[in-house]
Length: 272
Ligand SMILES: NC(=O)c1ccc[n+]([C@@H]2O[C@H](COP(=O)([O-])OP(=O)(O)OC[C@H]3O[C@@H](n4cnc5c(N)ncnc54)[C@H](O)[C@@H]3O)[C@@H](O)[C@H]2O)c1
Image 1 (spheres, protein in one colour):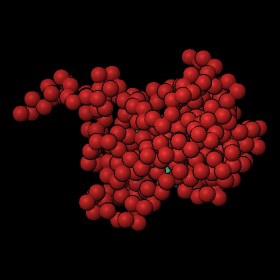
Image 2 (cartoon, protein in one colour):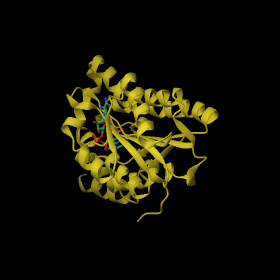
Image 3 (tube, protein in one colour):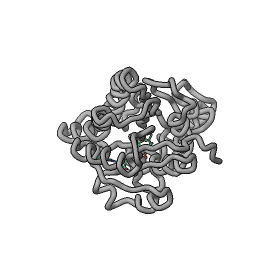
Image 4 (cartoon, protein in one colour):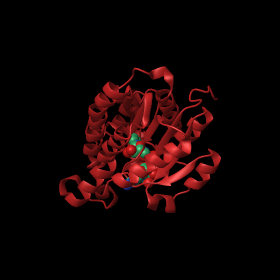
């Protein structure tokens, strides 16, 4: 269903790799709501993924950018303003990657070069994106910037590894940069803390199947899907949430405030 919530709004969407990606679902929803945007991803992801299909479906152009490269980001911002015909009203940062997770390296045995790479891609890239937008004065007043996170930033999930630290850093950047973006440009900055979701990044986490099943049983409303996340993001891009900023917002079916549920306790007692 479309409400025309984003009619006339322009933006950039980072991180659509394939049809499971949260950014992919979000691009489809933003398009349905009347928004126009440029799609971007790392050059290697563009070669491996299926973004052209999404671009066609949403009448969008694709500009490659490694989100850790300031040159790439400056090029992306300038070219996107030309293509879309003006400044942006929304930006989605939907990027995450840990080399330690990918290569099965334990949290207690980090390869710090890999840790640094993961931090740059998953967290510092958000600062780089915002600094590039801020310096280019590329956001319209009352624009909205959203990044995606996970609650391992607040609570311990052992297999989430160094991504937990990256997400804590990402959420802090949202608050810190959000202050300056709000004060100087009337732009809001928030993170959405999403349920475990079966995507390429999600499924890379060790024990993901157990992880997602546990969260499903624990949450009174069940896990939020990628589609739910897309819907929520649309509300944050819309004019209906103009003074929501510096927040970490949970889209998780209630998981973050649970201690234990009947369903989880039943499973636990079965195995006693
Ligand atoms: N899937 C989950 O369980 C879950 C839960 C909470 C939060 N998140 C977050 O949601 C976001 C999107 O992930 P997803 O689950 O849709 O998985 P995904 O694998 O579809 O998306 C991750 C994206 O990051 C991109 N990326 C990696 N390195 C990059 C770089 N250097 N420059 C630009 N882009 C780069 C990838 O190409 C990919 O498109 C991530 O921030 C992730 O941590 C995911």
